[in-house]
Picture (cartoon, rainbow, N blue to C red):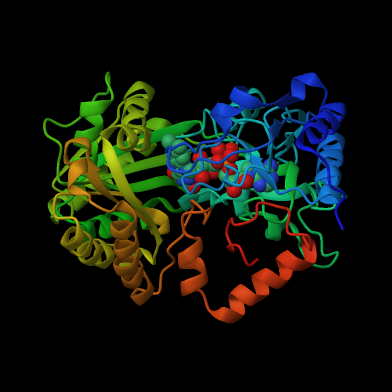
Amino acid sequence: MPETTAPDSTVAALREIVGPKGILTGDDMAGYLTDWRGRSTGTAQCVVMPASTDEVSKVVSYCSRQGLPLYVQGGNTSLCGGSVPGKAGGDILLSTRRLNAVRDVDPIGNLAIVETGLVLANLHEIAEKHDRIFPMHLGSEGTAQIGGLISTNSGGVSAVRYGPMRDLVVGLEVVLPDGSVISRLSGLKKDNRGFDWKHLFIGGEGTLGIVTAAALQLHTKMTARADALVSVPSPAQATEVFRGVRDRFDTRLMACELVSGNEVSLTLEHVPGLRFPMAEVPEWMVLIELGDTENEEVLRDTLQDCLAAMFEDGTITDAVVCQNLRESEELWKWRHSFSETNKKAGHGIVFDASLRVKSVPEFIERAIPAALDLAPWAVPLIVCHLGDGNAHLIVMTLNEDRPKITDLDDLTHRMFERVHDIIAELDGSFSAEHGIGRKLVDEMVLRQPAAEIALMRAIKAAVDPKGIMSPGILLGKNA
Ligand SMILES: Cc1cc2nc3c(=O)[nH]c(=O)nc-3n(C[C@H](O)[C@H](O)[C@H](O)COP(=O)(O)OP(=O)(O)OC[C@H]3O[C@@H](n4cnc5c(N)ncnc54)[C@H](O)[C@@H]3O)c2cc1C
């Protein structure tokens, strides 16, 4: 039986562990209790911010003894509401923001061993200082932390070349729900000592423990870069562009993104100072990034030739190849502004479909009319990491049309049902890179086979028998 304690003594006990700088209460917690999109708000007794693995372990031990629900938060940029506590009021929210030391960088082994509160952009800078790269790039990189990226198994635009976080994690240190610490941070490429348990925590969304440090795979820095924007008549042609550049450039293909013109127009409208390199925004376009360790001019010329052939055979209708780094950066600046734009522009019902690349056009063709059937006023935006088959459909109700939604929960529910059915018919997944969080728990329990859910719940029960870690996230209340 848990010891029972009054809330004040809980805060006092946690303050004793982390010191006065490591705890927030009352109004000071406000920035931590609502998710990035402003769609989930919870309450907590306090936000506790340990500065070392030892402090995390003591905090978790305390919560375990008391039976206190414990949620973990990194940069709080989750798009699925997994980073905020529940509404009951008794939860503890652990923020990893002070857990951000760089423990080691090994340029020979191409490894960085860092604590998980480190912000992704800071890791980029650290890698750069050692003439390496950490190849994870997404719009939230100035805020998202390594722990959040691992726990949601983030993808981003470079997954086509380097894979999602799962492919970039070599080892982990984790505080388990009873406060004990397990660690494999040696950075070994080969290690067959039983189950490779790190995979339970990659994509675990804080439900099995707190990831406190990670050995991460760095990569060789590219010295040559070539970027292009091409317009295509349709998503089907975009898959041909992907096939063409993948076959021509193989591992030199760093990113291949399909975007609908309405998303770009909305972004140019909402974010000042962006430059679009074509005279008009096309209906469909593909962004391509290549990287190499050889000559940049040769790379750019080869890309130009490859695109010229596609223009000749009608696969593409226009192309702009960036001539320098400034033009390349301008191109990716508006690409990375989409989530920010969509937050400002209205309410988007967002889909994070994972599909075979060849099924992406059919998904777009079927999902858009299915969604518009339920919300005819909406603008269907497509942002697709085409090279890894990850299509985001954002069914956007612009601010001025917001009154047309009479029951948002009901609309969302019905749209999930329709669009997720299409994804299932295409043998895809309704969660590619954002996780499940609170947003997709019902879908998870409803759509995944019972035996699979039972297996996940059995793992959860074995690792977290008291059910204190992020209750309600990923597997629902019965986990
Ligand atoms: C503008 C924008 C653009 C984005 N673009 C992309 C994109 O292109 N690709 C993509 O994959 N995602 C994208 N995302 C979402 C992405 O999931 C997050 O940015 C990132 O992965 C979350 O990191 P975070 O530190 O903010 O985690 P949080 O939001 O704080 O947490 C996310 C989840 O991880 C858990 N967690 C956090 N830290 C730990 C830890 N140390 N141990 C255990 N559990 C933990 C939390 O409990 C929660 O369940 C975007 C988000 C935004 C706001």
